[in-house]
Image (cartoon, rainbow, N blue to C red):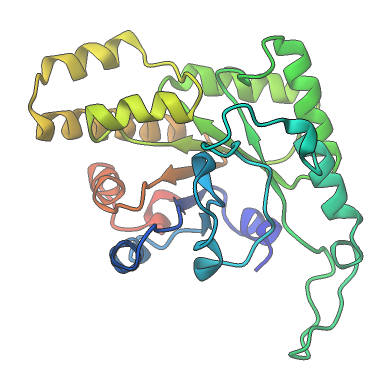
Amino acid sequence: MHILDIFRKHRTTFSFEFFPPKSDDAAEELFVTIAELQALRPSFVSVTYGAGGSTRDRTHDLVVRIALGGDPPRERPNYDRSQDAFRYAEDLVRFIRSRPNARRGRRSRLGRTPDPRGFGIGVAGFPEGHPATPNRFKEMENLKRKVDAGADYICTQLFFDNRDFYDFRERCDLAGIRVPIVAGIMPITTKSGMERMAELALGCRFPAALLRAIGRCGEDAAAVARVGVHWATEQCRDLLDNEVRGIHFYTLNRSHATRQIYGNLGVTDSAALRT
């Protein structure tokens, strides 16, 4: 099913993100996670391609997809973006849309004709602001160009204050951006993971109330996880109350936190969240 059909079918989408495992044992654990989350009946799932500049070797074991620019390789701290074939996401989106198969269906070797709409394309959005674009006016201009180049939807970076998301959504509307905007949610499960989030998200903002709640946990790891899941649950409840177009869970290849959020919301699968 094309991503556009998924958005048309579901008033609100619920999706999960996984990253390529680094070992055979991790791969087995990931497939256990996938089996557990399958019961939640997501609208779709995604697999990152070398997240955080990590290895890309195992990605194709999970899914075949276009390789985005993504994060620079960790082992090359002075990586020069000018070496990239596509320096900006706008250029990559436009290139994909320009390909013959993205404009009209071509019969595959298996005899099937691909969807004439070609690839479904999603681009990133940054509710707290793009780290490389301090000028918020310029940031929205750049996002508008990405969408106009052929993007079908926007999936946001993780955030912990829904007001940032709502402001971002309103600014998109003012800029004439009309594609679905999916909210990215990553529940905090450990203090070390919280620090890792800040690193990967290039300085995501943790509200003072969240920091106080985490601080009260001390060294109680289970309490930290409970606070993180509770906070993410409240984010999801509020997003649903405010007619979010979709929620994308960054699972970190674990199922417990996402399943707990669903349970806290009083449902057993995504279909129940759409009622």
